[in-house]
Length: 310
Image 1: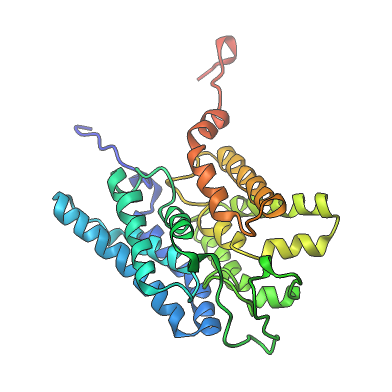
Image 2: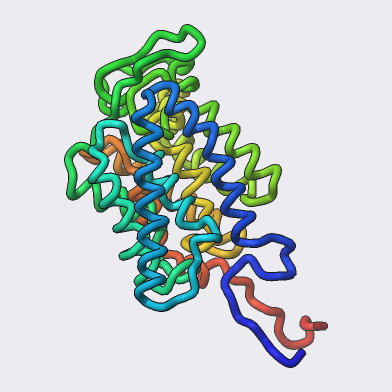
């Protein structure tokens, strides 16, 4: 070998490419996007489209100005925009969606060196930025139609409401919230697709969800309440699509388990003891910052002395 190329994952021997993986993630998010468009109307598609346009154009212009190789063809900017859009409601003005997309791609991704160099998930960082900057992001929109005859649950988002919708309502997504977080069935279809395509490990989202479920079961003793907390808010969306990010989560299986347990504990703490009803984005953002420590905790120690036969 005359030349050694160092690059971010996936590597050439893996049989996968960044573009293929990102396209798989986009495909996996389509059921949630289509469900959101049905429940909330065409405005949902417009919100997601504006977010994608902002991330793709932002990355293109940054590479052009910085005289760097164009990277929009790897679809990572599309994934960032699509994921950000699914985390927003149709109540968010389109100019704010564009601002969020530019924040995600320019400040969180490109200025840190591009794909593989950012220390936190761009879509999550942008959503938290928008929560702090724009009041419309904190609330969820009411659905305009039901699915399968299930009665619509309008008003406040389920986590902020005094009474909880039925679990069936939560499964089909006939309640208020962000575009991509309401329909649990659509998100689970995306989960099955990503596992089948070997893009994510099945146990990573499950660990996150099981941690939140288990803590609520212990503290409330109510199985229905624990199930509600799993289906409510952005837990499934975050566990499936954000806690599995290749760049901002540990590279080892054990490290990913530690990551998801920590994210689950923080999510529970924010929801159960805090004044803010949701906590998934903040929890994942906090754990992103702890990834170097988790990598050290999860690393395997090589055998020493007479026990080493390698």
